[in-house]
Length: 119
Image (tube, rainbow, N blue to C red; front, side, top):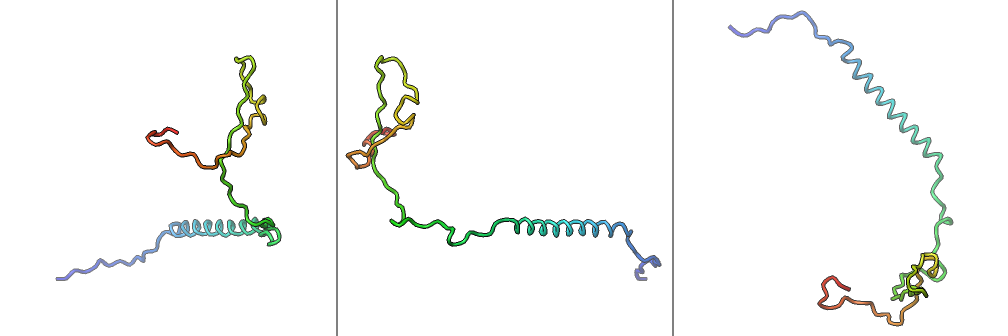
């Protein structure tokens, strides 16, 4: 004899709470996303627009500014008269900012040959 399926007169309906809970969660997520987009649009409308072309920076009349490379000589630190007192930063030229001047020799300094890591 062959196999026969058991006879069932019950129709399988799931519990209503098992289908309502995921739907409600999806609805809450969809509402939250719509609210976030709406809030972003409101914030974006309050921001200033892009600048006009007239407000953009302009090149100087002399043309683009180029990099200048030159060798500089440092300003020497002054010596004290008594030989033992230290100079404080406010006693230095330029209030601690060492000034420089243009060097006569504009050739870049190179490493000494044979000196490993030394300058």
